[in-house]
Length: 223
Ligand code: C5P
Image: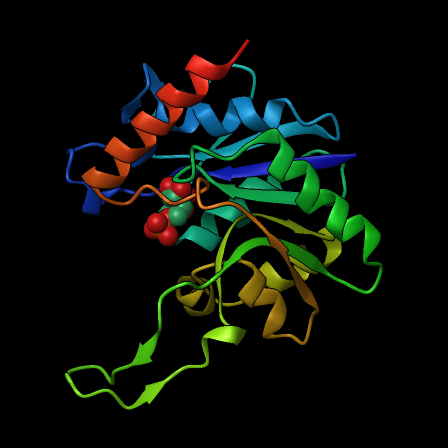
């Protein structure tokens, strides 16, 4: 059986609503609640641990812990509060349009690939991506789009591999924008699972408006 970690302890400064992003209202509930409800519908997930902003109330039906300084620090704290269970599914509360079906397919991909340490939701990049050195406006390189994937969550890990990958100094944790990188940097094997555009990350007010529209559309289709 699996355990799930939802990281919801970010400040959400870029959203500019004056409170943590996970607590912002979306479709009549807190943003984090959408991810909790989606993962609660996954049969293989027997516990959900949520890293919450300091001082926030614990959502019902889950284990809540205070988050850390950096995202992967929040993952580490939540993992420490998980009961037995392997693998570990890690999801960002900032992706409220995640579905139980996507979580199931990432879990299945890791189960089927015995040599992998992690399976991660991702999408092939559709934009052309160029490298521009910091402080400069001059393009130094155009990357080959055929090799580029934009990474999302859920990310599913063999528990021992994630535990070991998170056992690093604070500056390394702070540099991690996803947990799969912590696996890669110690030579672990990570596989991508094709995801959907709807599983985008809510960062700006426009993202929040788009999420609201998509959730309204989903509700109108629900039986
Ligand atoms: O900052 P970013 O958008 O990458 O955050 C991704 C996710 O990590 C969000 O769901 C956010 O709440 C969470 N996070 C966290 N603890 C932090 C920073 C971010 O749980 N210290």
